[in-house]
Image 1 (cartoon, rainbow, N blue to C red):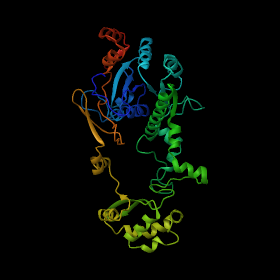
Image 2 (image 1 turned 180 degrees about the vertical axis):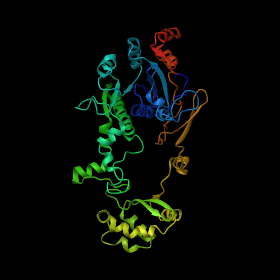
Image 3 (image 1 turned 180 degrees about the horizontal axis):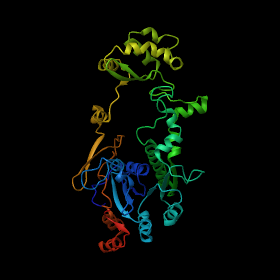
Image 4 (image 1 turned 30 degrees about the vertical axis):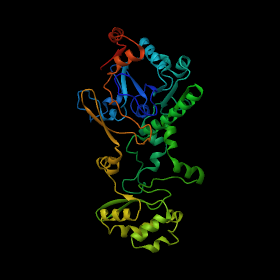
Length: 413
C-alpha cells in the first residue's frame, strides 16, 4: 500500500492506527511496524507530534524534524487530520474500520468528546484492539494526572535505587539516562497488543488495553521489589554495585576502570586464580555468594589493590581468556561501533523521499523465518495524507482538496 515495498514480517497484513505522540505510544507502534504491520500515524494539523521539535539535533533536510522524533517513528505514514473537527473525527472513525489496532496516549476520557473513545469505537468495530497509554492508568485517584518519565522514575522507586549513596561524593537519587518509563511502557504495550491480537484471532473479540508508565516502571523493579516484598530488605542506592551479586561493579585498573560481573562461585574462584589470590576462593567469608554479599567491603579490600596493578587492556584480555565476564564502559559511539553489533547489523539506515538518510538502531531480535523489516523512514509531517485517504478510504483528490481547504486535513505544517 501507498508505495511501500512488499510487506513482510510476522505481522504482515495487520494495520495500526497510531494516535499517540512523543515516545511510549510511538515506540509501541514502531515495534509493531518493524514486525511487519502497517502504521498510520495521525497528527494534528499545525501541531504534529511534539517530539518533532525536541532538538537539536535536527535532520538537515529543511523539515526541522528532530533526531528524537526519528528514534520512534520509522515504518509509519503521517496523516494530518483535525480530530476536533466533526469531519476529521468522522474520517478517523472510517480509518478505524480498516485497522486492527489503535494506540493512543491522550488524557483519560479526553477522546470521548470526539467519539474516539473505546466504547464508541467498539460499537463500530467489536474486533478492535484499543491500547490506551497514560501516566497512571484509566482508573484510580491519580488517573487524570499527566505522566512524565522523570516524574514516574521518582514516584516508582527507581531513583531510590539508582545513583550513589547519600554519604558518598555525588550521592543522591539519579534518574536513568534514557526515558526508561516511556520505553518500558511501550514494550509492555506491544506485548499486550500481541497477546490481544492472538485472542482476537481465536475468538474474533477485541478488547481495551490499559497500560501506564507507573505500573510498567514498578514492574521493572524486578528483584529490588522482590527483595523487599519477600525478605523485608529495604533496597538502597549502591552506585554500580548489585544488591545480591558480588563482585559485580566497576574497579580501577592502573589506567582506567573496568567492569567485573561474576554471577556464580566458580567464576569468583576463576578471578581469584587470575589475581594470584586463590585462597580467597575458599575463604569462608567469600566462598559463596551470600558470604560475599555480606562481606563485600572486606572482599574489596583484598582484590582492589590486585586489580589496580593491571593495565585495563591486559586485565580484560586475561578475563576473556579465562572466560570471565568483564568489559569496559563504552561511550555511545564506541557501543554503536562494537564489532558484535556490527556483525549483527543492528544499526540500519533508511532514506526519505528526498534522499535524506536517517540512521537508527533496529529491532533487536533475530527471526529465522519472518525477520523484522525496515521499509519506510520516519515520515515528514502529513506526507501520507493524500495517499492513505485515497487508497484506504477510496477518496478522490477533489474530496481531499475540499477537506484541506476547510482545514480538516493537511499535508504540511
